[in-house]
Image: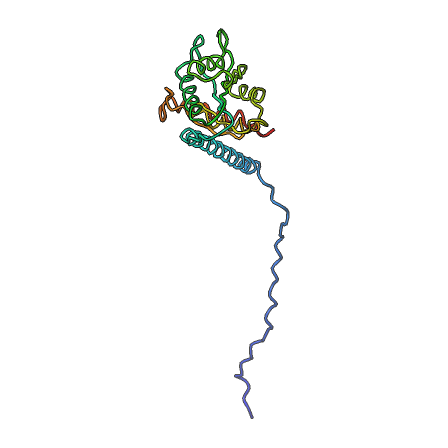
Length: 239
């Protein structure tokens, strides 16, 4: 007979408890508002970028025009044309200033070389003057032996553009389309632009004996002024 008095009871077997499910965290899908400071920083960044781009374009434009002015000043385009156009400069009681005389002498040399049958002198009368720049140029060229019927005058303009605008009245571009403009080198780029706007096929030749010497500080000052003149003239070309 089996002794059961020392038999240990078996431990009770309990099923594993079901894992407790964690509560789902609430997900907020609402858009986070952008702070006013962040908006201001973004706007400031765009404005700064725009201003920087404009400054870069402006500086590049100025440097580009300066380069074109210097290059044109050192490029002699003398050739056979219908007329030579001399840009006016200061005169003193009917006598040309050294700058104007240098321009007239260059025009005279080109005329004597047979490059054109006519010379057009330009320039009006400044306040207090007894003579116009064109009249002074006319008298000087006649003294140098140029026939009167080979000299035309535009004697109303008191600026480069005003003189150019008066040019077609004495030298219609339909009859004399190709011209050679004579002036100081720094003045040639803008002069050619203006003549082209009026319908002329323009070339240029600088006055080599002008007291405004190449590469001088004086020339640089005039070049800087020409940059402003080109920018002022741009609306005339665009509209």
